[in-house]
Image (cartoon, rainbow, N blue to C red):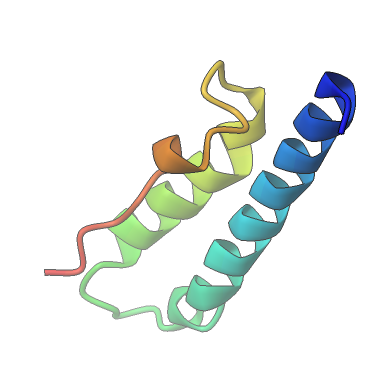
Length: 68
């Protein structure tokens, strides 16, 4: 696989992972009194903006949320 194809595949994989992570919290943001609503919204915002960072498409650098 050529380097450009590999980078393209990494980007696509990262976008798919972001989509999956966003879908995992889709229902949670619909709960207005969720105890971590502000953190969930901030997490989702970071995920949506990740592709514009210098760390994209490094899956190891994807934002995460502390559920504890």
